[in-house]
Structure formats: C-alpha cells, structure tokens
Image 1 (cartoon, rainbow, N blue to C red):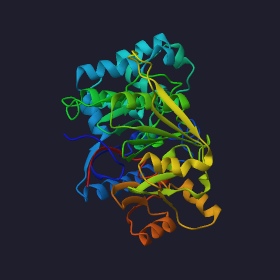
Image 2: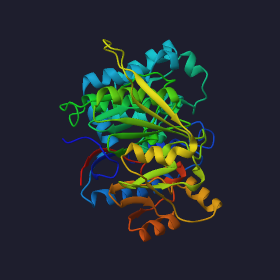
Image 3: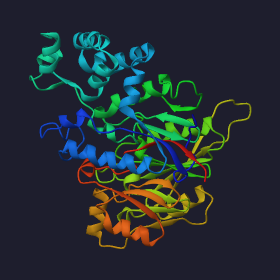
Length: 413
C-alpha cells in the first residue's frame, strides 16, 4: 500500500476518517466544555453530513479508510490489545484499584466491544450493570451517570492525532487530556493493523511522549519543496515544535526546514489550519485578521568537527517578514494569500465556521463547508473548484473538512 504526503495539494488517494459514532451521543450540557466542544450536536444529522463528506471523496476515486473499522480489526491482534489496554487504563489516572478492575474487564471483551469501550466510554451505572459493584476509590467519587471511562467525541477530527509527513507518520502527543487516548489507538493501528504493519515507514513520533512537548496535526502543513509549516498555538508548544522539527530534520534529508508560525493561544485560532490552508502550490487561503506573525525557522545546525550528534538551529524572524519567510521556505519569491474581501465581522464569522479550513483533493480542487458561501464563491471566481458539503451539525464542533481527514497517501500530479 502506497503511503506518504509530500505536498498538501498533491492528488489525494487514500485518507482515514471517522464517522461520528455513539461517542457523539454522550455530549451533554454538563460535559460539553470538558470534552472540548462549544455546543451540542444532533448526532444523527452529523452522521448524515459526514456520509456526504465521505461520498464526495469516494466519488472522486479516493480510498476512504474508516477509523472505527481499523480499530475493531486491530484489537483482534493480541499484541495490539496488550499495548492499548495498559495505556488506556493507567494507574496515575484511575488509581491502582480502578486501573486493575478496568484492565481485567477490558481484557475479557471481544474486539468490537473493546473498541466501543475505548471510544464511547462507559458510565458507572453501565459498568455496574455489567460486572456488579465496583468498590474502587475512583468509582466511589462518581455519580451513577458519570463516566468511569470518558468518551472521545473529538475522534471525527482525524487530522490531529496522526500526520503523514513525506514518507513517514507522526503519532502526535495531544495537548488536551480529553484527547490523549486517541493517540494510543492510532499508534496501535499503525503498528499492528494488516493495512500498515507489513510496510516499513519512518516514525516521526510515537506515544507515549512528553505531555509538555505537545503538537497536533491541525498545526502541521506540508507545502512541498522540503518545507514543513507548524503553528505554535493553543495546542502545539514551542518544545513540541522543536521535538517534531528535530525528528524530521534528523530522519529525512529531503526536509530542509521546518517553519513555525506563532499564533495566539485562543479557541478561535486553535490550530494553524483554522487560519490558513493550501489550495494550490503557491496559494493559501488566509484569515485576514491573522495579521503578521513572528516566525521561527528550524534547520540543521553546524556540528562541531568530530562530533556525531545532531544540532538544531532555530532562527526567529520579525512579524513583518512572515510572508517572505514562508515563500522562501518553498523556494518562491512570493506566495498568494487570498480570502474573500469582506468586513472584519464577517471574516470572524468565517473563522469560527471553518471557512479557512479546506481539504485539497488536488491542486485547485478543495472540499469546503457549504455555509461559507462568500469564501466558496470567491474561490470559484479564482478558478478553484469547490466541493461544498453540508455543515449544519459538523461545523458545531469547530473544525472543517481538513480537520476531519488524515491523508495517508497523495500522489504527485
């Protein structure tokens, strides 16, 4: 199976998505913010909209791999189960007694049941109905309908937990506790699922990793020409940026530089791809309110003669140099940064509704939410084909088509 992403606008051939499952039915007014959502979704309609999204991909001949199917299949592999279960039910999270009880319970489940537990979670009431009384300190602190194992409603944002960069994949250390189990599940899939296990490919990061040095896929753009752009944001730390840059520059000679763009730590611009994404080799949509930002270029440093170790060189640039720094990274004299001309208020509305979060299927062909009519009409006028998908519910999760996809393979056009 071919894998690899060398440019975010090369022809998309294979992608992982997650159709929203029962975990989305678990959102309530009491837990919605703790689980990183701003609103409650209508799950049935969200699934209909996601089906339209995947149909738009398969209609173009793109192979769609469903995360929930991959997970159930890999959990039939003993080694994968024994990797996932201890990391999912760690003593430092649940305490020794609850961790032991949950580990024993999980090991007795069939693959599909275990996948359900790991994604949809389980409440104290549901657990007691299955195994009887659970006298642990952790469960004693919970009300009957509190989660013993929390659900993972952010799973449909497949972009964040794993990212293909050139020939390799990074399993990303997630910033928010509510999403960290997701990375463990992706790690198991890439290690043991038959679709990936027989193939050798570089691993830019694996879990578990330092929780202070975090980075997420929404902050990573692969613009081609040996460059990688990374947002330092609400979710990606400076230490995380340098960890990823070091891994890439050490592991792949074709990667010349990794450029950080410093963002505000805000919900509105939580990732780099909420404020910019590629539509062509030299063209990006860019949120007009972003302004000029400080950038940092990471390259290979000069080693001391006779020294075998790797050194990372980081050079910072003033905000007014941002566009030139990004253009130089991809060997261009300048890049086109475009957005529909509009008022600041309407641009902010578009930012919240993922107008700048586009999934490129090929150069100048993108998937976008239908609600962003101004941006979509503007792109069409610029010669960009827009595949508009319904977004009445999916957009409530504050992520767009790019967020919902993990490209595994793009072919050069």
